Image (tube, rainbow, N blue to C red; front, side, top):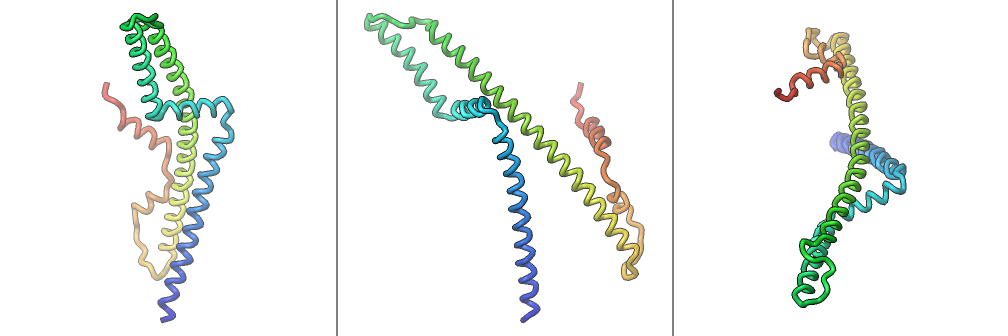
Length: 186
């Protein structure tokens, strides 16, 4: 009965440690995001809010209602013989739509530039962590192979795959290989 409790206690301890590592990792990633938000200039923060508003379905509905209302109002006023603010072909409406489209495009491009810089920074961080992890894995394989060779209880043999895996990957070689394999046809 006691032997059954040990694996359970060990499993619980391992689960607790793994959970702590997960929380630590989530906290670290969260801190990166918080730092990026904290470092954002006030003007950029305003642009991000504008883009968030523009990106909602309600903005599209409001824009369509505004344009339809403008056209309808002017057509109804014309049919009733009242003074028309913007007769067809709706010169002022065209100017408004063009100017708002230009401003919307500029605001979205500014926000996308920031997002691209953040994505590039995250990709660089991912690359650094992956290279470090690959190096650590190669070291673990080398240590296991050394243990296998030194242990009298394990039959000594040549393992070409393990030998190759002990060598850290060459990022330049991997990059060149990817470039060769993924070149678009001319």
